[in-house]
Image 1 (tube, rainbow, N blue to C red):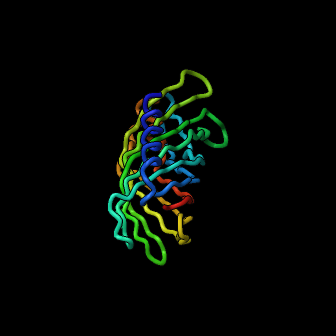
Image 2 (image 1 turned 90 degrees about the horizontal axis):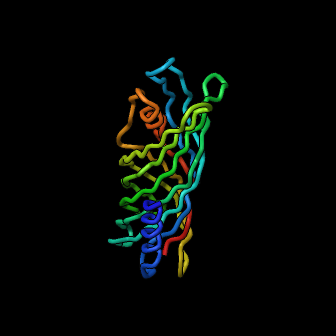
Image 3 (image 1 turned 60 degrees about the horizontal axis):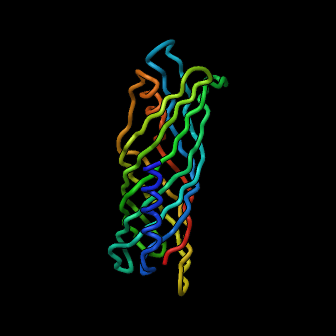
Length: 198
């Protein structure tokens, strides 16, 4: 709860900054994990977990050179749920929700291009079909890039982009349920990002 309040406060603070240079946007995405084999118990195999979701992002340009800008941003992603399956049989669910803070350089050319890094705090919940649930928090740096275009207007500029993100560190240990849930966490995220720049 405390983390959610921190993220909401950061988003509110960014949104309250005078409208000199910044953006508000929505990301609709697909998160793709990696298949894993538990190294405990019977060595159960699990297919990759690949849920869809959405995120809200706010950014503020700390340096704006008109053709390029350095932006600080904050993101909140909704809770997604993916089935834990293997061979068509469901063995449980994996929930994932995250908040992130980061920096990005945006080049405002004929085609807009952005590249940046962010720190994500991912809350994972392992829910087997039988037995207790396991919660864990995974903190990882991520890199992300996007390519798109904007529509210049006098007050705000609507924009649309394709965005790809990937973690800069990965967990591969599957010795416990906690380790396994972190190993099944997303390895790449692909989405459509759109909103307004002001």
